[in-house]
Length: 197
Image (tube, rainbow, N blue to C red):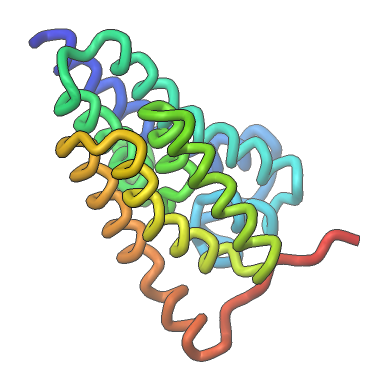
C-alpha cells in the first residue's frame, strides 16, 4: 500500500515538471506561457524557440508520463494503481504544482502514459498523431483524433476496466483542453504546422 501511494505522488510530481518552462529557462528562450498560444507544450515551443527546443519539450513531456507508469508496471499491486499512476502523471502536466498549476494540454504526456501501459497502444497513438499531422498539418486535429482513438486501441489490446477508465478520462480532458482549438478548426482559423523546406 505504501509503495502504491509513493508511486502516485511521484507520478504527479514528475508530471508537474514543466519541460517547456525548464527548456525555455535553460535555453534563454521567452517563457512559452507568455508567447504564441500561451501553451507550455511542444507545438508552441516550436513557434517560440525552434525545432531543438520543441524536440526537447516533446521528449521531456513524454518521459514524465512514461517513466512513472513503467515503474508502476513493475512495482504496482494491480491495474487500478497503474491507472492512478498514469492519471496522476497526466494531471501533473495539466496542473503542475511547481508552476502555479498552469500546465499544457497533455498530448505528449498522455502518449508517454500509453507507452508505459502498452507499447503497442502507445505506438498506435503516436502513429495516428504523426499521420494526421503530416496529412492535415494541424497539430490540434492530430491530437484530437489521437485522443478519440487511443481508448479504442487500448480496448483492443488490453481491455482492463481501470485502464480503460484512465484512457477515457485522459481523452475527455484532452478534448476539453482543446476546446478553443476545436472552435478555431470549425471557423477555419486554426494555425497550420509549417511545411518542411
